[in-house]
Length: 177
Image (cartoon, rainbow, N blue to C red; front, side):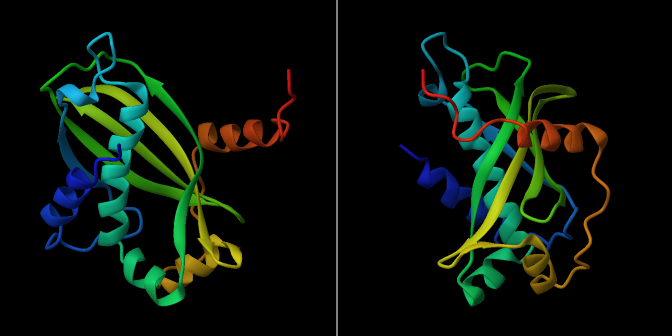
């Protein structure tokens, strides 16, 4: 089940936090509970992705997206990601999450997120997202302009552009076995 109570807690916790600029990092902390574990008693890979949600949603609110989205009937959806899991995370550990927008192209936006235990990164994700409306996708430039920012994305790091290029080469739909 989706952790709506934890999401509400995060939104409450950051309700009076200063607004974020478009590229400012949102930093949050998260405790790993028994229900976050897999059968091997470590943070479940799927739950890791869900916990990353708990950083992105407050970040988007702090950037002003919630107000702009409500006024225009827009939403946001995950359109792809790549995640590295590098360190074992177990019950009751407290992790720091860093979430930040890295840029966008003609169709999608890109967010980088990571979990840290002290100075050690435990996992790292690049997430592609799409802005949506009842009519379909909304181009990132339109949303960025509505937020009051220049519509040109900064240059993204080469590892991100390489991922975008490689992912575009994947066949869709995939071949059925």
